[in-house]
Image (tube, rainbow, N blue to C red):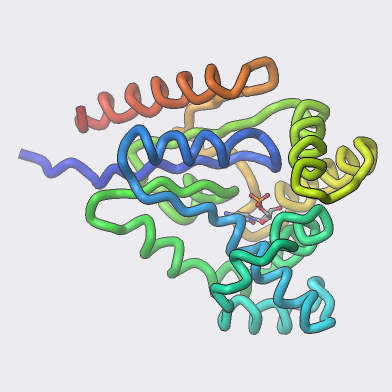
Length: 218
Ligand code: DC
């Protein structure tokens, strides 16, 4: 008899694709702990900015990632547009990715399983995950969502600059040499462009159930 693999659900995709909302809903549905791995890169970017250093400085960013202050994960500036760009810049340094790798792998390796969302969960952090989703949406749709979210959180930014930021992040996150954003060969694609969030969540649950059935977990 083979032992089923742990219930690890990998959710990857570009900025504002809906992957965070979907990952949280999957964690509730399957009763699993959830890690938003983007927050680790955001906290690293924020630490560099608070120290008055340049996110493009690989040594400074790697040092920040190695001594990450957990309090930064709750900082109000973590989710700002400016900090998103800093996160994207620090995340391209291989030494930053190496410094954050173990935390993410350990989270994924919890005995009961876990849900992780990010850019490289299905390809690098948990390539053995039995269920993988790649969540995407058209850039204009993602910019509209991010614009609404930023406004609701008190970060004023016009739509055109939110769209430009999203396109810049897409290019940087997909174009970097180390662990670029890409769909794992065995990840199910979920395009949320025309879907209300509830529908997207229901589809994600069905895709995960189908993947687990194939894996012999249900
Ligand atoms: O998911 P997010 O928008 O909060 O992520 C912020 C940045 O962090 C993103 O532009 C790229 C980087 N990131 C990454 O490189 N790898 C991950 N697994 C998660 C995020």
